[in-house]
Image (tube, rainbow, N blue to C red; front, side, top):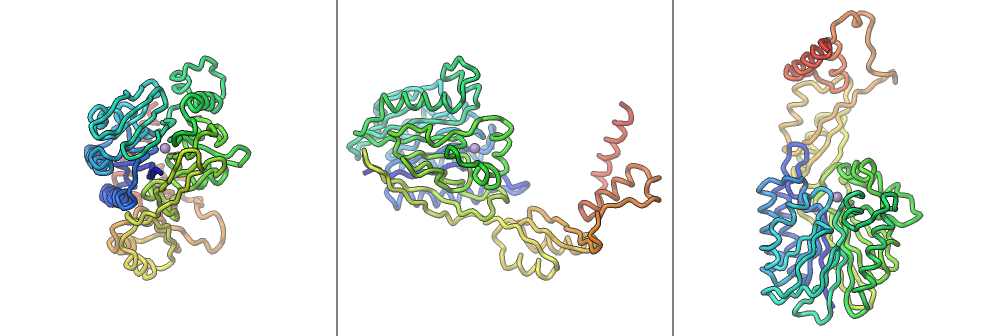
Length: 414
Ligand SMILES: [Mn+2]
């Protein structure tokens, strides 16, 4: 039996507006290392979006390298890490020659092939080609095969795979490639896995719910505007026993038959749309030619995210004092606006207030922003001030007014 730990979407270096999440990322990665050690895991799968940006800062890079070294137990326990849409492929693969000696295998580009051979730790890369890897571990007497599916956009993917028909369906192209790989390598004498960073859904099932509301805000444009088509779970070849996915930040198994197709979730809640999600890693136990068993393990570290609505200052303060370790977006219901003393009192009672949004009560139930006749003769700056005050519940500051005046003056000139 082989024990596999599946995790994804670390987004190292990610911020929540002006708040750094690095300290929480350290804590939660520590927690993941502990789980891997306590459970005696043999293999780690990291399914993409390792970093949050193409150019991660050095703290994020350092955190990744230190974490992977410990997760790999200095080379004893292999880690397969693919890139996601947030990662730079060059950046992820850069440390590869060094990392490989520690059993850490990065895979980002379909035009690269991980070299075969035996590492010092005894881990052996026995077969390898574009989008595929076979490993042999000293303690395990069967081979582990992996179809590697890092994120790539449609155009790039067709180029890599030598697909000449530009109109060919993205999912058909990948399905064809995977079918070929599974046919060549994935017989029933080994454990067969897929690790991917794409948007998967069950064919015929509406993407509403999986594809929209529950999806982290940051992934939306890539899926729905950037135009990479959704893949279907039935595009995965039947030889595969478990598909380890990254991309959507909510833990869920998209499909269970014929094999589990699972999003492990991000280790922290990264946006308020993930506020009520429990974050997890997945532990998989696999034998050749048998159904895998898997269980999700909840992660406890990191600040929870909350969206709260209050109508009074005292309620706000007492909730904030009772919940010091979190990030919160507060909607404050008020008659007019949040005055400066109230705002100040709220902001200084907690260090994790991400947004403080006034919700103006309107007893008449009418559109709240109405200009009076006497306002119409006023200049643009004044009208902007009225509008801003109405929207935000406070006066725009001088810096903002300056920018506004600058914009206005430019549009007058042109
Ligand atoms: Mn992603």
